[in-house]
Image (cartoon, rainbow, N blue to C red; front, side, top):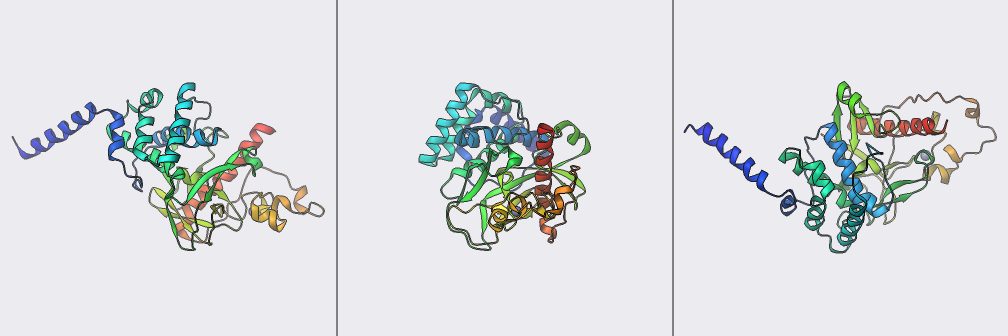
Length: 328
Ligand SMILES: [Zn+2]
């Protein structure tokens, strides 16, 4: 037998072996800091993100956070109870393998994942782990409910630090996951005002990008604590102001995300400074300006921030569009 045939046969055997392996066995070989790279398509990352946020985040916060397909019911009622139990246990024992194994054994999860190729099972497992890190004591941050933003109907989430961070630190267990969209994928995946809350346009790559993962929960602040750093198909988070436990992890999305000069920004800094949505209304010239739904997004200063800052800008602009769609 030629060597290449031997090699091909070895690959075939590996795949056959793998296909005979129960999916939940993937839990035995995971790393609690998943790789920064990925090969997920827009459809795959949409499914994986919805499933992972349902199993991990929603189970803890007890409400449905952002979804690419918000009307889809990913779990049966009894499975939602199981997911809450898994997360309670994870909070106690911090055992990634056990939590992932429990999730991968769930009937609905297997129904979504089993038809995919084996390497996609691994990518789903890694995406689950990214979200589990939100509740890991080593991560230095977690997610909490947030009722500050009317654009989320005052029912959103925020990321907060759970330890002290110094300027220049990188929060290595927190990342955004980025995936390019071509025109067909954009048409097939996105529903305007429904699931385009986290879409950006990369001025560098000249294409739309889907931006999900735990980093998609980071809110804007006019005086942020962190910044996005582009890292290929992920966005990492760098600390720009020292943080103490309880401080919110925020990033700056630009000057015009809530109208001209962020006149309708509802961030903590605007509230403290009586600016944005908290400014005195007595002589505001912007009161008379009409809202046409278009935002002029300011280009970030650093090229590194270009992609992700624009993503965040789109996220907020699109959230505002969503609000208008449902309330006007
Ligand atoms: Zn603000």
